[in-house]
Image (tube, rainbow, N blue to C red; front, top):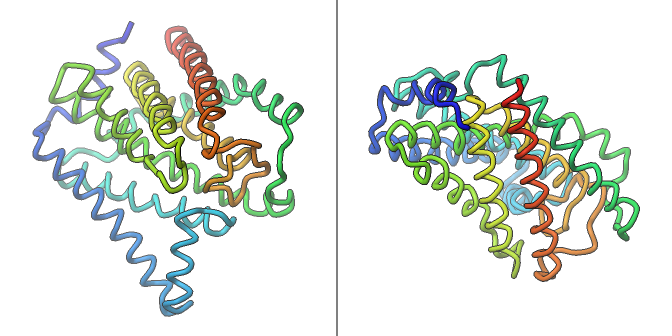
Length: 296
């Protein structure tokens, strides 16, 4: 069962100023700071590389199809994190640390959840490597050279998204509404919708939105049960590690992937099967994480 005490401690800082107008204003601040960060980055690069090169580079960054563009894209999420910090501090007048939960719990839960995800994903990794005809992506030397920056970028990107959806949104909605549809389902639906990318996903776009929203629902439940962002952040990080740095379907964000899978968004039938299996695997990971949370 969900422990009211654990969840109450996590939500308590948001209850000081739970007004919906503050939440909406805070989300506007997050967006403005995020866009402002990207604009400032572009302005800083303009004198160095020129306008034409900047425009071409920004178009490439949006797809992340080279090592440099992928890392640059991941680092833009610094702006999203700064936006959440600004909303919490100046709109709700609450400590930034309260978005994460207890520091020691966050670190422990992050490492354990990441380990659970990677361990339970290993059969799928084995199957992909030895039973599918994979197309080789980047060379090992390039991959190893960019790996430290890529890991930092993934920590920032997944951490920023968790701060928005499982930290700020979930806490503030739970402070205002008791119903789970409000603080658990609504952020998960939004999490799925922000991954709506029809140009890259084609006919599989709504399957991806559904699977992403389902993943968000699992992360929201585990956040409520753990009382910190650690579990959700660890699972999200491990998922994106495999999806961006090891295997990719090749539509975008493949600049540092070691292998390209022999199917993609252009095959909705195959994608529906693979995403269905992915969701079943997430249910297993969710069950193991819940067992660990009860036993800790």
